[in-house]
Length: 170
Image (cartoon, rainbow, N blue to C red; front, top):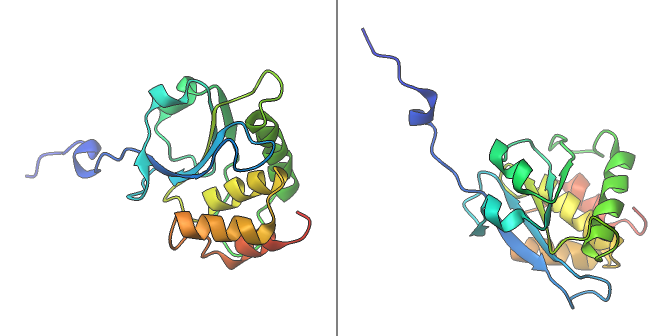
């Protein structure tokens, strides 16, 4: 008879990773760094809960380890699936990105030093949300798509998400 093996033995331990998209000075109103990544990504710089004490995390997939949320100044759950088409409750996502953009501008009590948009692998959902924040901060759709696909090769393969970011008005 085979012995039962705890699930954690079979699952590799991942440290979430993210890539820096923009920082203070890259846009006139931007006072925070904007990062995009994944809870199970092999790409980007690793980040740990200690780095999030004055950061906002946009959680797009629900994959970050549970101990990240209480370490974060502003936790923004915006979980949606990565399928072609406009995400369900898209208007709510726009409201959240406007709130996060204000925090990245240094406005109000939720002002932060960094914004991390995180999904599973850091390719599509995190790209859409980070891109929407950058659009809200004044960056053009074309510049957003170019920036994201340059900083995270292979990202925004979801053509609907890419199209959303390219629209003149989101």
